[in-house]
Image (cartoon, rainbow, N blue to C red; front, side, top):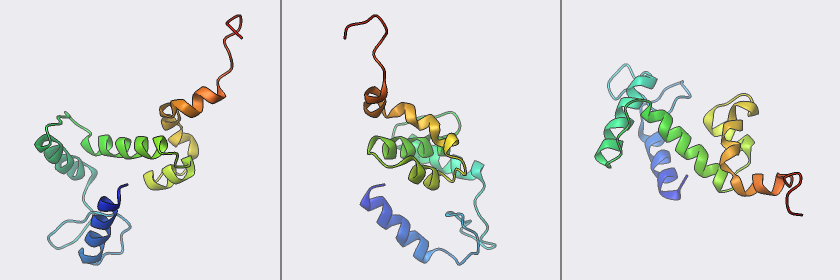
Length: 116
């Protein structure tokens, strides 16, 4: 996450209504309950569209996947990626291992019968 986004998130968390929930985004009007996953996706879809990116559904998932992909590509340990995504098992985060081609290429064995 960039410093700019981190600072914006901290600023939001400091001014949002008090809540006992660990969820980040709350309804703006009382009662300040967590936003549903569907609502978060609709909001993300609206802003992605304004940016010229169109997704049919699962816009919040697209954002989660993008964050995880960027973290992996920057060398963040899988445990940290799992923590950010809220995964309780590292195996769930394993899908992002295929994105780290540089590390995977160092682990690959030579093709049998190929050049030495």
